[in-house]
Length: 525
Figure 1 (cartoon, one colour):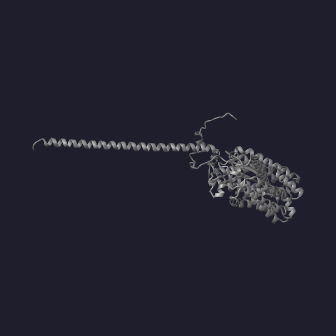
Figure 2 (cartoon, helix red, strand yellow):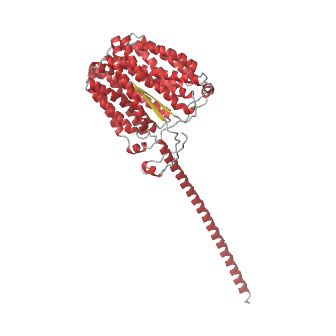
């Protein structure tokens, strides 16, 4: 495009839109460009990153000297890693019935494996990231997939539920570390302005886990045994450990070698608020509990309650993954100005999905699957954006806190679902999820109205208004100081005139008195 269109931005009407009268003045904080939030839903969960940070990540000399072909191959390997880790995360849901029959345990106990995975991600993410911060990306990620491979091999060879749980915990720890460092690793391979494109490529791999990976796992588990997908994961893990060890740059960052402190600045929320951010976390946690309560046991629900044929389940997973990705892309343009209404829309779709699934009928269940996929995708995308608008800290801290809330809900949900299955049966699961989703909607509805009006204003317009207000404040301060200085000069001039007049009066008085004295002295007494 060669034509350039320039428009004048009228700022005055924005003051009323922001309700400046009843709102607190903006704090003098530095707000960077609005970050792009990207969430790709996986079956029963999701992976989220924040892209377009002002500092895209450290690029070492080794990374700068990578050939474009080698960097592209390394990026492809990271995308495959995103696919493998996402598919492994959702594998318990796809294989729950096969695992239960293969190990001779109730399906409710298999659901606890999802809890173990989510709790491990919550607990291990930050400590592992800190421990590996002084390693090169090559060593960190190659070692990550080596450990991940050990975990999936433990799962593939498991003859008991405890061994399978141990394998899930090991692979979950590696999963947590991978998603903590994959975005900056991908960003370091290319120029800073390509950060969004590179991280998006990683998320495409995660999207493929829901669209392709989970259906394939379901088919393989049913035809070859539930261990077969884990053996496939082991092969992929070995290949990735070797490939990333050869492709990624190996020298650690300078700050890690020299012990320098990293002072990079990151975007923060343009409406930072601890109460509002806490509300987002509560909604995230409750919604995640409601989602995982039913979705952990969705395969036995499909087959035993709704009467869906086993061969149809992979098709439903593929359909749901496709709908989820499409819904994510469809709502992206609404997030910057309608984050909270989009959250409400996602909760509404989920409520409709649980209602349809609660009927236990085949056709409503099929439509409920579509609504569930769309609602979960919309909700994930909107919740992350809502959280990033209110985070009182830097975005990487806010995103990590949001992820902890999400995974905590994903850990509690299978426990709740297991209790419901044992006490009330599979048919009661959607009813419990519906109640939890409505509770999340009630918390969302309690959001502050003034804050909601502010959220309708995109960050770049808010920055323009804040810049205007700052300019006006400087002008008022300049006028005040100028007026004060002029007043001081005028006061000094008046005081000088008064002193001069006083001296003149005193001098005139002395002259008169001298003349009077001289006149009086001219007459003889």
